[in-house]
Image (cartoon, rainbow, N blue to C red; front, top):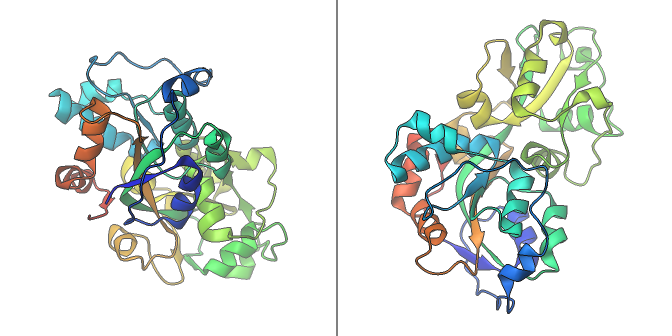
Length: 315
């Protein structure tokens, strides 16, 4: 079910990861477009590929790129290879910034940082947001590491600023120091890590070399032979299992539950979170962005998610 909420409440909506809730839109500002376009789109974002004039500009998280490719292919009647060349996704937090600034018309993304929403709350621009899929934060080890299972509490002790687990020997592995890699602050993975795993407990401040800015790079670091005995990192399940599988990494079982589409859908796996489609609430009825939004939250959109290997949320 779609939700129509003022921007100030989106933070609460996203953190609760609720999937069925309906609100009443707050009045849009007298000139919402002007309020947004006073600030230019972030200068770090690359130029978008040229699209048909009546097709919405889509942005989002790295792990939702395959979904965007499928949308372009189906809606534009083009080959998947051609559709892939049209996709430009700036990552979780930047994609929401693009939507706020008017540089994107629709976002398919995981949760942004709380600060991203707060930054634009003063503009009073409401968003319409619906959870369409579910993913999970998974923990990666090199296949050389003999450890296969840990508890959620043990993960917190590895990553907390005051954590007590420093060696793999504490977990049944070798007598080797644990090197815990993290993602950059504004990534969807890092938001999930703080929310789902750490909660109110502060995460350790890592050395610069242990912060990895790209999802694929994180997999490469863990898979590297030289890091085999020591490293641990995290990523989202879809990216690891579908987009960038690597035979030199393995996924940890958490509290005796192995991550899979089935355990994610059931919620049995402990670190599960929704991802969303979002548009501005003042998007006119019948606009390309509004029509695509409605299609994605409907039966055909959910079926497309399942076809692409995502865990879809049913209405």
